Length: 117
Image (tube, rainbow, N blue to C red; front, side):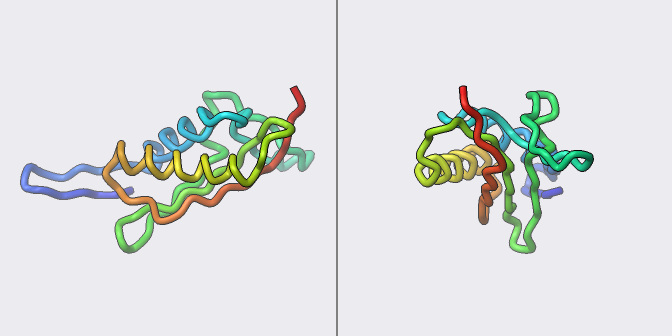
C-alpha cells in the first residue's frame, strides 16, 4: 500500500488499484491477447478472463515511494515482440503514474505464451 500525505489529509492506494490499472493498460495494447497465468496443476499457461486478470500482474512497493510492476501476458502470433514489449512497458508506466501520481520504477514483462488466431 502506498500512502500519500498532503495538507488536506492522507490517501492510501492499495496494490489492487495498481493491478487493475496496469492490467487494463497492458491488455489494451495491440497484439496482447490478455494476461496469462501458469497453472500449478498442469504447468500450462492459461489466458485469464477479465475478472481474474489481476492474477497475471504483480506489484511491489519500493522504499523510495515508487512501484515496480510485473506482467505475465499472452500475445498474438506474428507480432514483433521487442516493439510490443516496449509499447506495453511505456503504456503501463504512463497510465499508472498518471492515474495515481506514484512513479513507476520499472515494468518487468514476461511473455508466457503466443496464440494463433
